[in-house]
Length: 587
Image 1: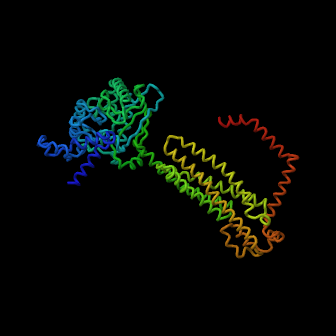
Image 2 (image 1 turned 60 degrees about the vertical axis):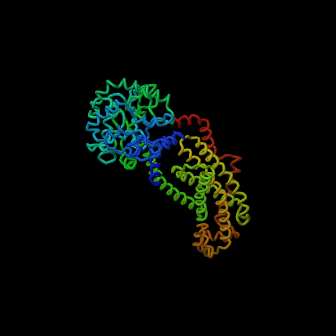
C-alpha cells in the first residue's frame, strides 16, 4: 500500500507539475484535499456520498492519460494540465485552465468529430494537439519566412498557403517513409502537422480531404475574417497574458495558437513568419538532424528553416563543429610546439612553454567555477585553446628574444646569469603585460553580450590570457635561467673533440649536438681556440657585429644615407596620404 501511494503521488505530481510550479501552496493544497479527474476510486463511483473522507483521499488512476487512440477518448478526457469544471467546483478558488491550442468549444468538437471520419484523421491519436504535449516535447518545428520584399504580402495569402501546404506534404511524406513521425491513424499515415494549413483545413468544410490547390481556392473567402479575428485575439492576449497561465483569451477562434503568427500581428494584421509543428518524438531528434537536407524548404515565395523549438539542431551542429575544431586545436598545439622548438632549439624551454599554456586551463576553470560561481560552461569555451596557444607562444618568443639580446650585450665570460636576468626579465615582463592586459580587457568587455555562450566564452578566454601570463612569469623565466646556466657550464667543459660528458645537455639545447659532432680542423673550432673560456665563436661574431651596427647607427644620425632618405621620403608621402588611403581601404 505504501509503494502504491508513493507511485500515485509521483503520477499526480508528474501530471500536474506545471500547475504545481505556478500555483504555489494553493495548488499543493488542492491536490492533497481534492480527488483529481481520473483518480477516483471504484467505491467513489458506486457510492459518492457514503464516505466523504475516502473520496478525498483515494488516488487511483482508472484510465491512463493520453493513452487512447481515438478522437472520442480525447474529447471525453481532460489533458494532462487541464482543470475541468468538476474540479473547479471542488476547489475553493478558480484555477487557471490549461487549454488546448484550440478554444475547446462544442463547435470545435463537432468539426473534429466530422473530420475524424475522413481518411486523414480516421483512428488517429489526436491527443498530440494538446498544448502540453505538442509544444513542450521536442518536435520538428520549422520556421517559415516569406521571400518576397512586398510589404503587403502575408503568409495567409492563398498562393503562399498553397506553397506551404506542398512543402509540408513533401516533408511529411519523407518523415513517414523514414518512420520519423507518429499518429496511429487507420490509413497508416502520421498525424498532420499543426500549422496555417491545419487551421485552414479545420475552418473549411471537409478540409482534411482537400488538396493544396483546393485549399488555396477556398481559402480566399476566409482570409479577411481570419486576419481580423486573429488580430483581436493577439491584441487581447498581449493585454491579459501572465506567466502563471497559458490559457488563450475567449475571443480567440478555435484552432488558433500564437505560433502561427509573428509578434506584431495585432498591429499589422500581416505575418511574414509562421511555423509548423510536426508529430515527431524526442527520440528521433538526431535522425531528424541527419536527414534535415531532405526536408522541403519551400518554393520561391516561402523559405523554411528546420529545427526543434529547443534548437536541438543547432546544438548538434555546434557539437559536431566544435569536435572538429578541437582536432584543429590539437594540430595548432603541434605547430606551436614545432615553432617554439625551432626558434629556441631547446626541448626544455619548449616543454616548459607548453606546460604554462596547459596549466592556464585548470587555473582559469578554478576561478570561473569555484570563485565566480559560473555553472554554465558551454563547449564553445574550449575554442579558447586557439587563443591561449597563440598568445602563450608569443609570450615565450618575447621572453627568449629579450634574454638573447641581453646576453649578447652582456657576454657570459663577464656577466652572470643573475645579472642578465635582472636586465632582460623585467623588460620582457612589462612588454608581455601590455599585450596581455589589452587582450584580456577586450575579452572581458565582450561579456556584456546578452547571449550566454558568448558571454561565458569571453570571460573564460580573459581568464586564460591572464593566467597564461602569470604562468609565463613563474615558469618560463626560471627555465631561461636554468637554460643559461646550463649553457655556461657546457661551454666551460667542452673539449676539442666534442661535448664529451656534456652531451646529456641536449635536453636543454640542441646546439650541443652540433658541437659534439665538430672535429678538429673546422674553421669555427679554430676561431674558438683564440677566445676566452665561456665565449663561443658565434657569440664573439654576434658581439662584433652588434658593435659595428651601433657604429653605423651613430654615423647615420649625423648623416642619413641615400636609401634612408628614400625611405624617409616614402614614409612622408604615406603619412600625408594616410586618411585618403584609409578611406580607399574601407571602401
